[in-house]
Picture 1 (spheres, rainbow, N blue to C red):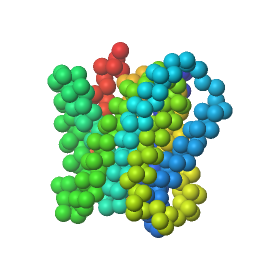
Picture 2 (tube, helix red, strand yellow):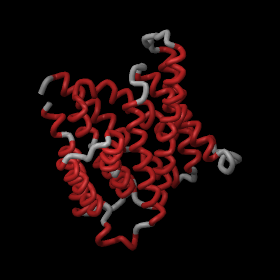
Picture 3 (cartoon, rainbow, N blue to C red):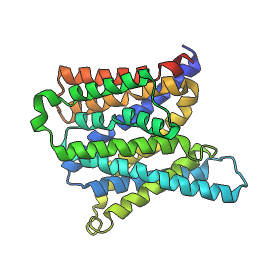
Length: 295
């Protein structure tokens, strides 16, 4: 393998692994008495400050199309609301269900993304992509252990998990399609700003009167660094070397990493059928990206 490709693969893998640790840390913060409002607000506010500092100290190309840039910033902030909603919905989900189930539900963005692509392009997905969707659904059924323990799953958690997947699908589209002419740090800054605004609006009426600022250390710092600052930088550095196809496949390591973190730190049980389901979902991601990988 080419050294640049190998370096890119390592960067993308580290970025995905960073995302994989988040839900377990959120669960641990809940166990320490913190709320979803405190967790999400600290993550996005500290993440925004971190990216803002990068924007100030890292020189980025300056453009003079001010009117066009203002419109791009507005679109990024609107698109960024889906990032905030994804965190809110996902962190609500893992209050009710195991992290191993929550991350599998979040990965439903694989087939949701295909449907969104079909609607936007006004074109039916290929047979290969349809097969990938079916594999994801089968893998999900196994990974959530639905055949043997459906009665044990909290349906509030399932609903929040699917809501998170839908929002994540929109978030992926926003991150990859809106104002791509701007520098990645600037784009991340305004996407985070939109996410932070929607989080504050959601929780402002009920959850901030007794805000516990102890969430900022170490939980908020960890979530901000590994959830909103480091992964975008690693992805934007690694993806150009791997390409979208290989990069997407490597990024799917987030799924087993998340399950392993929950297994080790939270002692969440994961049986053989669940691991088979997780493997099937990863295989579906590979199948979807075979064409671009060969290219």
